[in-house]
Amino acid sequence: MEHSLQAAGLADILERVLDKGIVIAGDISISLVEVDLLNIRLRLVVASVDRAMAMGINWWQADPHLNAQARELQEENRMLRERLDKLEHALATTSQEIAHVG
Image (spheres, rainbow, N blue to C red):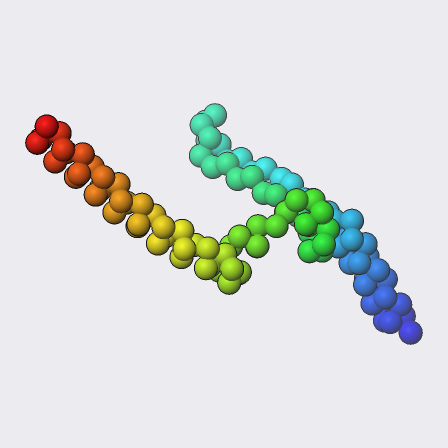
């Protein structure tokens, strides 16, 4: 009985944390003779997906490793850049030819 109450208590705590969100922040600095050798800034946000989106955190939607649509957009962007490079090169070549003739 006690084990199930502890599990229920832990589940309630987890549900509250995910619903409200929690931020853990910390800085670590290692110095030697007043010379900074290493600085680490840690920021951790624990929240449900709905709560994270309400806070404006949605990086997974644009990550091409996690989202097929983002992967497609990345490929389309690459192809458009290649086309733009070709057009710019053709325009520059044409402009040089016109300047040389004129």
